[in-house]
Image (cartoon, rainbow, N blue to C red; front, side, top):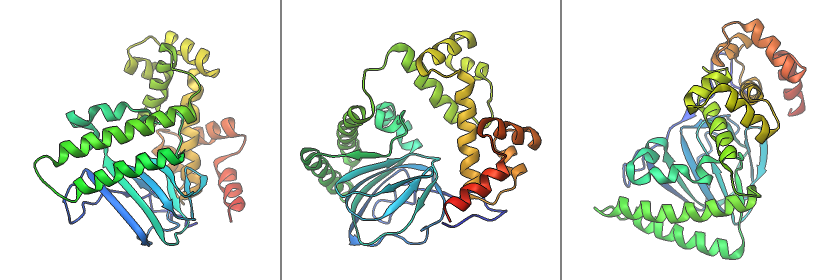
Length: 296
């Protein structure tokens, strides 16, 4: 796995428009026994967009936030912006991928898609197992999306949105079946919203009161609900997100500890060092050395 040098941030790959449509917010990829671009193999990177991929056949492995996934046949994979991805390699690949940006989801006709469980991904899942019937349904929808994508016309965007809504709604139902055991209560929804806000603002907001203001509730009420629903104090969720990002940067980059501390919103690198050791029982330097030794 390639490490980024002292002067490199984790690169962010933008959604590049293809020659067919020129669309900068939405794209469909198809691989039929071909090899994808090998330029980013073993390079830790993020994407600035959502990527949903139906793998028909692959037989390779990739890492998402330090978790390895052996890509299975007839399985659906999905990632969102900001997660760190490392591709270990590909043999010939048979797959269809759909990519779209946050801006795409902000369009009025697509706004409902942003609320789907598959897109919000509260359980941080990345793999959906499909039955034979699921595969048939997904394949049928991908055929329709591909056909519409290949023929630009005045109805194209409406048709793509309609097909995409059906596909993502179907996959969101599978998501809830595979990752959730019961419907979300009002309090559990508040927990999920709190976690989502942390994911958006953890670099600049480190206090529970900051998030209470964003969610229009009191800090006391938020703390009470979060502790009851998750079994952990509200501040722990903020700290865990900071530690996750610190671990990502310590593992994948050669940034100095001071640079990582400032990136995560700590004004004092020594305080970041104490914070990380308190949360993990290792200093950042000790963690970096141990994790790299493990994966050499």
